[in-house]
Length: 295
Image 1 (tube, helix red, strand yellow):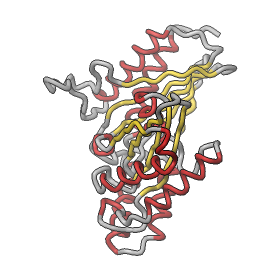
Image 2 (image 1 turned 180 degrees about the horizontal axis):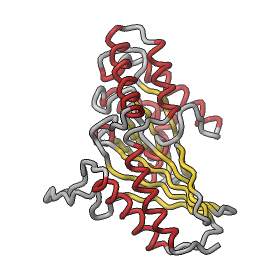
Image 3 (image 1 turned 45 degrees about the vertical axis):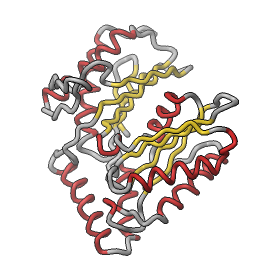
Image 4 (image 1 turned 120 degrees about the horizontal axis):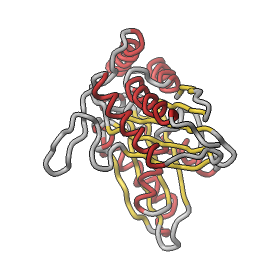
């Protein structure tokens, strides 16, 4: 099914809106998890921090305000229906323009700079930014765009290690726990802990980041990985790091694992932490121009 020329204008506008709204409305699964954590908090400082979180969430919804000043690194996960006939270069350009428009028209703080000169174009774009991951879905005629503005506090807490097969599952557990404890308060806990296992070094880290976009309460479909998610989450919450690292019963809102098959002589593992806000926004666009927005 070939899309009309106006389809790319719609993608541009949709990406603009995804960026802006993701910074103002926290996903409902995350809000529910914060409320549950607040209810079971046993320390006064923990209850006070969660109270501030919930107030920030309410201000974002009721006053059309950003929940945090960090506009993040713009990242798009784009699933292209196999039945769609798209011009890839036009699609790419539309996503970039939408990112630029969000920054200029809202306006948003541009957080993107050159790694060497630190030049800032004030558009939240630059060389290879925004980051766009493409995936193709058979038997679909929908363009599914998931947007994540990844803040630097949590992004700085990213870790990867090339384990060897002899390290086994215990080596994976040890690495994940060591990184979470070492990160402490820096990623604005309670966090969503994304874990990538397998693949190559670059794929492994991508899997860890993608894992943080999964709605809270979902488990990996592989029973062994689902059990590992539960075990790691319980262990992390026993560390007592708590919200903002000031102590408490909830250090992680969830642990999500994504995996890929790997080489016989290696077993890479990566950890990517997501801050308590876990900002994300999704839109599904049909070839006829219907847009369905959610999380």
